[in-house]
Image (cartoon, rainbow, N blue to C red; front, side, top):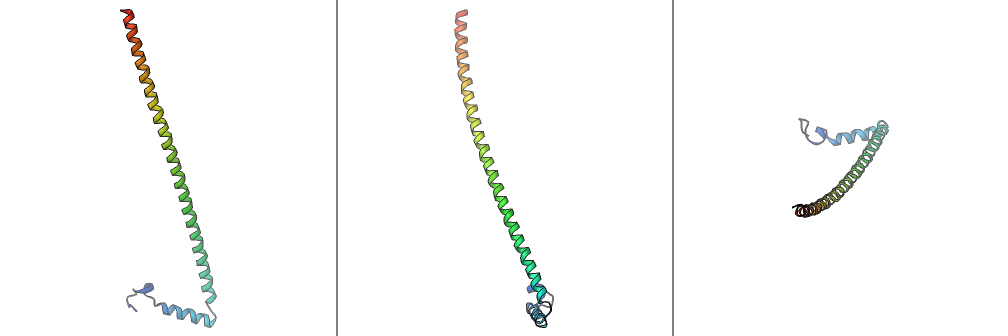
Length: 110
């Protein structure tokens, strides 16, 4: 055993705890309290694990929803870009028509 208190389990010899627990059980004291504490710790651990699992599921669902929103936004942006390009082509066609009409009008007036 390490005299400085280091080593396994913070310097405590695990055999001492085992002897103390078995002595308490033989003498009829403390055994039930240890089981109650262990049961309570088990319940807390199970509750913590369930809460962690629920939080993870919620995070996964939120990530999926965010991904869906991102995908929808990308699709909408793509549609808007296509609409913008079509509008630009329409404007160019009308500008050509206007130029052509302006040339015809100029010829008639001169």
